[in-house]
Image 1 (cartoon, one colour):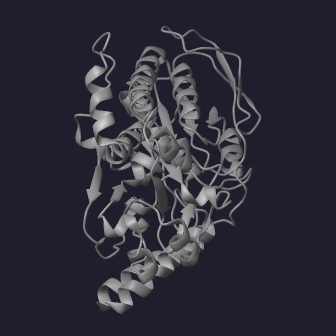
Image 2: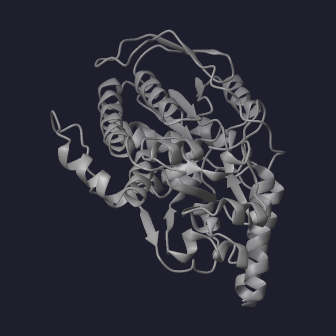
Length: 389
C-alpha cells in the first residue's frame, strides 16, 4: 500500500509541476489554401496553422518529427510511419514508435528543442498541446513547423487528418483513412437515428466530467447518447456534484481511461448505470487524442448503448472497396472494454498522459483528457483512494 501511495503522489507532483493554468478551449479557425483532400499531393503546399502562420512545405518531406501522440497516431494511420524519425514519449503505445528518437524534454519541458533539431527534420507536425513559444524556438532554429488546431468534433479530426496528409505527401492515405472513418460514423448514425437516447455521464475521475462544447461530449452524442453534464449546463470540463448525479440518474457511465473511474459513493452507486452494470471504459488514446482512432470509441459506445440497432446497421452496410470498413475494427487498437463490475483500483502509468482534447491556449499546452485543475483533482482522488486501500 505504501509503495502504491508513493507512486501516485510522485505522479501527482510531476503533473502539478508541469501543468500550465487551464484556459478556455479555442474555436477552430484553421485556414488553408487547399480544399478537399486530393488523391495526389502537389507541392509547394501552404497551410495556415493554429499560430496564425502560413506554413509552406516545398516538397514531400522525407524526415518528419511529430510532437504529441495525436500527430504521431495520424501519421501511422495515413501511411506516413516510415517518414517519422522523432516522437514524444507518450506515443510509445504505437507499434514501432519506440524505435524513433524520443524528443521529449525532462522535468517541466514537454519537448526538447535540441533533440528535435538533432533529427534534422524536413517538417515538424505539432499537436495543439505544444506551446507556441516552443514552436517559435523551433522555427528560430530554422525548422518548418505546423501546429494543428484544437479539435472539438470528429469533423475536425477529418480535416486535421487530410491537412497532415497534404503536408506530408500522404494525400491518398489520408483520403482513405477519412473515408473509412466516415463510413464507420455513418453506420453509427444509421444505428442511432431512430433509437431512444440513453442518459450518459462521462467520468474523468475525481467527480470531473465533460460537458457541452467538448470533444468527448461530441463523441457521446454521435454514439446516440445524451450527455447529462451538458443537460445541466456544465460547459467544458468541470466537476459535477453528487446531488446532480442522483437527479440526472444516468443509464450509462463512460469512464475515460484508468484515471476515469467513477467515485464509488452511495450517490453514484444508486444510479441506474451502476445498478445495471452499464459501465463502459474507453482507453485514453481512443478518446483523448483527436486522431483517426477516435472512431473506435464512438463505435464502442454505439454498440454499448444500442447493441441491436448497431448490429442491424452494420449488417446492412456494404463496402465499395478494401479501403473502407463499416464493421467494428479487427485490430487490438480498438482497446475498449465494457466493464460490468466495480472499477478496479486506480493505478499510475504513462497512458494517463495523452493528448489535447480539453483546454488549450495560445501559449501553453494542457494535460490531455483533462483541464489542468481537473487532472490535479482526479489524481488527488487517486491518492486518497490509494491511502484508503
